[in-house]
Image 1 (cartoon, rainbow, N blue to C red):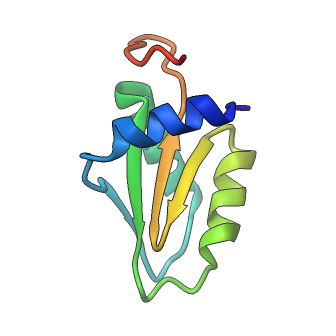
Image 2 (cartoon, one colour):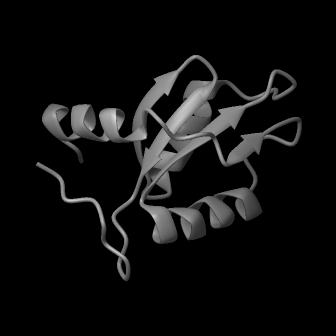
Amino acid sequence: MLTGKQKSYLRSEAHHLQPIFQIGKGGLTQPIIKQIEEALEARELIKVSILQNCEEDKNDIADRLQEAGIDVVQVIGKILVLYKESKEKKRIILP
């Protein structure tokens, strides 16, 4: 689990990022979770956009990602900020 200070730091780091995934009509599927995990291994911090035609609630999606071992840093509107420490390419040093 991330502390408040770490979340604050990650939010500031994610501010300039553009969402690299979109969750749409199909909702959060296992292949999408796999792709998100691969992107997090490469980047550690990403944004995911939830489209208007997505039938799942953003908080349910955040909970499912949390269960998959991905830290949900922030939910802003329809954007999720996700973090997972990389095993190979660690770049972000948390305070």
